[in-house]
Image (tube, rainbow, N blue to C red; front, side, top):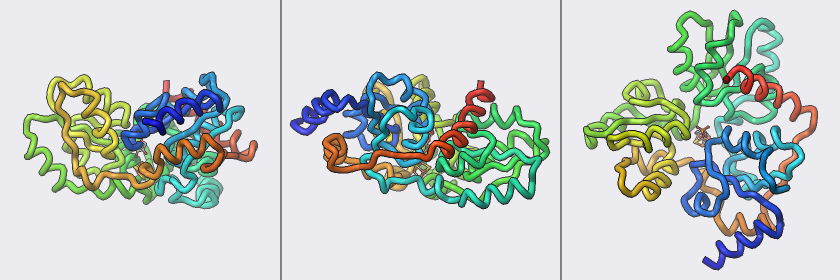
Length: 302
Ligand code: 13P
Ligand code: SF4
């Protein structure tokens, strides 16, 4: 309690807003001012009254905030917390691909580094990918880095020439069809909501495939119990928040993103005190090139 009070006080004295992704541990969700999916947080940041944003999430999420809010100081409490999928591709390989395929459109999932976004034509989120790819009429579309989200999109557009990269989220991709079927068998009355980063043989059993925000909305609105098929942070937050509802974990001990769990309340306090963390910087030309793909996403995602 003393620590929470200290953080509350420091937020005011340092003029800082705390943002947290839904995969953060419950004790971080508790002290955050704003909680959401990665893109929702980045979109809200420019409207924050505070000068500083302390981002509880992985590095690409803090980069997205900085790309859209260059005038803010963006603090990462755990600079080593990264998304392995966001870093799976060397941006120079994408540049070489574009040179060899000048008519192709390169689509980047928002889970990519700023350096990768800078090489792409348009970003997508797990909720906007279908709308945006549906609007592209390039003869070839390269989708990076997630083969599962990319494969999900490709299956919906058999007439489009969509090329996939062999990237994946090591957490969601490790889920097996057997685990999905076992959860459905254990809870036959429940619906299943899944993140599209899971393999195709898993998501084909889902009643909803969507981003973390869409999963939360679906679960809250569903009249039936729901099995939460994404990183366990979502169920960790939903279960105590809706005591009159029934939600089940899917592979509770397996769907854990270790990078998302690196931030602790102590680290948040020390970052506010200037004793830990990193103030993120992005070269301005890189930020502007990365912003172009995000702007294209906002335009096409409507
Ligand atoms: P969302 O954009 O759906 O929040 O997902 C982020 C993420 O890291 C999924 O694994
Ligand atoms: Fe990256 Fe997967 Fe962790 Fe999401 S859950 S941050 S995609 S490693």
